[in-house]
Image (cartoon, rainbow, N blue to C red; front, side, top):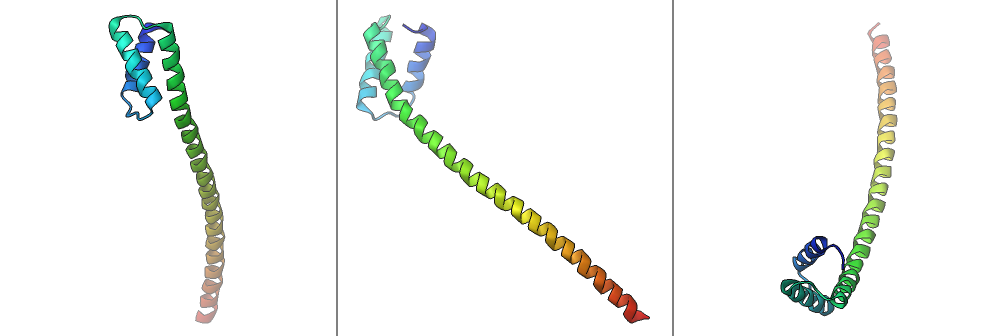
Length: 111
């Protein structure tokens, strides 16, 4: 049996989720009944932990895949931002050079 306090906290946390999986629902009800009656049987604890692991492992995989997808999108966005900043710098340099030429032209025209 895992640490009773930590185990009870896990059961409470899992119980707070809206679960539709029948296996986990059965395991949740069984473990809650046994906890309310005292110490749950080792077999019930093992079955419960397996049901929780099976149910939440899928969510963990989905969340990791979503995170990887967002990271790829952010990487592309950062690359585009870097490229645009470099392009902006080139445009600013062109403006400075062109304005310098125009200013010289004005000086010469005023003489």
